[in-house]
Image (cartoon, rainbow, N blue to C red):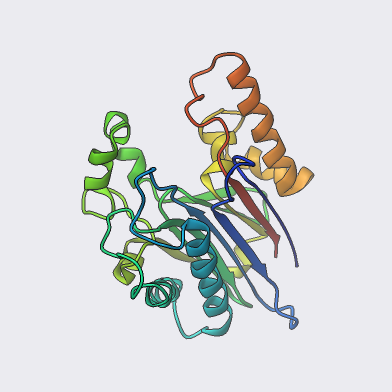
Length: 260
């Protein structure tokens, strides 16, 4: 088994709000990968004194530790407990009822000798490659069903945030874990896997450079950093050409690649 990981900030002027981890136990039997993408709050704040990087580090650390140490919990159970633990760390100092209280998208996987478990919440992505090279994407597409004109309005987006008929992120409510896309695949059917924030999935979803199998081939040949550099090149070229994606030229981008 081996893992590779890379993360690039969207700007040198603000902290990277993504968070990633890969754990391979010394036994060599299993492993865990986690990628979080923190949701950047507007200028008027999110009711928290700590900030999104603090939140993603706390939540990511809890997810990693619990995934590795609590094999009795499903990944939904791990996410629920990690959210609760993170909320308890700042509920006495921050307004956790604020609609934009720090929150993050989640992609994670855990594998052992017989099975690979996965969990995705919001617009992060998880890719599973079989022994025959076929790639299956695990996506939570609820955000894709929100009309673009709604997403251009902060107030309208907030009305759909962590609400039925809208979309869900990991924030302060542990019950959101039940909304995640989860599943289990026999270990023999997974050769490799990748977890990606939406800054990395731009290569497929925004710039249409290929499909998920093509992206996986980039990871195989160039590693996560090679994929992220390709995304940055496309973003810069698009901006120079006066393309349609200039509102947020670069996003925090992260990828973890694991060969099982």
